[in-house]
Amino acid sequence: MITTLKYTLLTTVVVLASNYSFAQYEKIQPIQSKKDDDPSLRIRSYPLKEDEKNDLKKIFKQDFNDEIDPVIAFQFADSLNKKIGHVNRQITQFRSGEVDTAATITQINYNVRRLKADREHLRKYRDLFHSINRFIGTPKFTNSFLPLRSKAGTDFYYQNVRNNNFKLLQNIVIQGASDQSVVASELVTGYFSVLRVNLSTVIYNTNESDTAETLVNKIYNGGGLLSANINYPLFFRRWDEIAIVFDSNVKMSSDFNEFGNELPKDEFIGYFEPSLNVFLEMRLRKTDVRLFCNYKYGRVYSSSALNEAIGNTSGDSFDVSLLYAGINFGNKISISTNVPLNNINGLGGDDNYTVGIQYFPSDN
Image 1 (cartoon, rainbow, N blue to C red):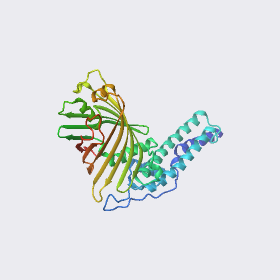
Image 2: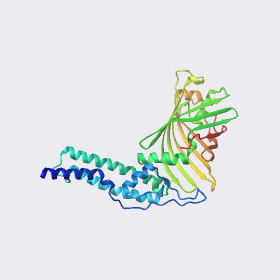
Image 3: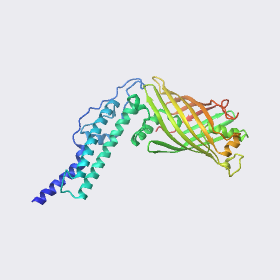
Image 4: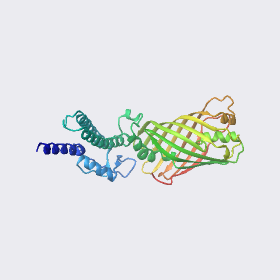
């Protein structure tokens, strides 16, 4: 009889450990965003996916609307934070044997694993709600600095915010002047912790035979045939009609001599470039048209072969400064200009701007 009772109590503890996180939460009524004929003035909200709605219904024991307001999202995040604290206390109690003094190490480890799984589930939605408030709403001003502080926040920023508001940096770019053209495209994009990492390519075609000027213009137009970029936003702020981002970026770019330049085939043509970027976007009211501007300042540390090719005999690093501005029509087509603001050894630079058309084949 005692054995049976002990087994029953242990079974009950295990069940509670695996399901307690779905117990009654303080109910918070989600609200729909205010609708308005002018989409640029409506209160922003996050559209919940079906699996997210189902999970949240289990956690909070209440139905969710299709959209969630950033202010309400902050309240949900606060509620989940309290529950995560409760989970941590439960884990401590199991490990110390306070819950069941007769439990074996195997039983304790099993309960702790289940509790940790529930904790990760709660953290996932806490981070989602924090991200909704931080990137879609208008949080405290200090939260705009170093905005990416978790993997969940990074995924949310690039998948739900950056792709929609600053899409001009993605997909296919075709730029050209009377005697030159540039085709640039991102090849692979991924994330490492809070950093965005991507590989891109730039194919540059010119009627000129001056290899040095061609190489300088590649620096201004995005890099060589293969470039790796590591990106992190330092500041992000969004209002109804304006969004602004300060970005830090590190680029490592290289060319392959076999593709047409006149340098020795065994020489490495490449450079390392840390840079700061400022993105500004303005939405025109009652339209789906956006004006955008990007200012970039970078410092280029080039290989000896590249220095020789562009006439940088001192071998010192040099500045790159340019302005990129244009207009975007419904995230389908952008018309832009790339204007260098300085000159490198009299090659390319401030008198060599390009005008481009950018087409977005998909709306991510």
